[in-house]
Length: 324
Ligand code: AMP
Ligand code: MG
Image (tube, rainbow, N blue to C red; front, side):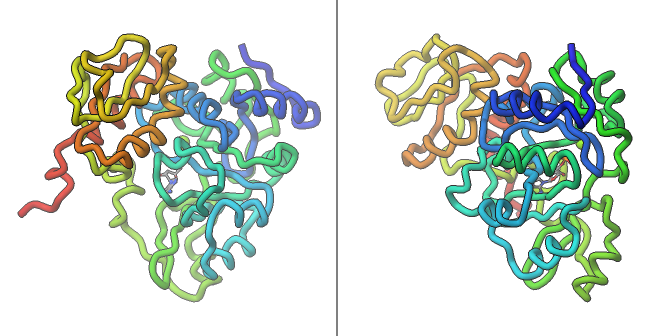
């Protein structure tokens, strides 16, 4: 069961949970967020698990200050101008990641860009005290509307999380506006708590709209991270020229002779497997193999999201090309 603590008494317990790789629901100015340490793969996997999300879409990483933001991402002048004008506040910027920033790949679903925001109030204080960024989607189970009170969070997620920090009703009550630098301008990826007109007034030009950059559209993750190698699912045998991505203790036949082998979770723990998924796929891909064979992964819990990601990687590449 969950505990609801007022902001005045929640800092210590929230820091302890986050430090231990667990999740905490926190108030922000937009809606309540379900936060985990963005540098800890188990913490990030727990976010997806608690929400029951059927797929790994990229999350927004929350920062305490500009210095933390600049350590994580590479700012262009326009994005920096927006950050200085609207942060802390309900604006999210999608930026190229700075290599070696420590952000766990599950936060960005393996992308080389990252969505960043600086929240106002308790969230900002918590991140500053933790000294690390927090990944936080809205604190509601997948498919439900965002929660704007601690009671709504507890009613929905109470059985799955240990702490809800109560900061009262969230002032904005809408998700953040998301923009991404594109060429010399900016694209509006999601309307939200800051009106597009306010941004346009500041930068002196219109925002582009309408999705062309496939990744941003919900359900378009297929184009996110397609490994160079072909992917073969539910493998119970593996060839010498194939790399093997394992799960659990039971090995595919011929595994000793696979070109490369990594185990998502020896213990068969879907949470651990989720936290290793993107890094291991990338590592096996870099080994230069032509095919990655993947052992069966049960559908339960995070298994559904893991299998969703793997089946997108296994989909015929022709499907990603325009029709001829
Ligand atoms: P939520 O955390 O539920 O408010 O949703 C985060 C939104 O940010 C989703 O619509 C994502 O698709 C979007 N997003 C997060 N990271 C990226 C990224 N690197 N590139 C484009 N969109 C992103
Ligand atoms: Mg949401």
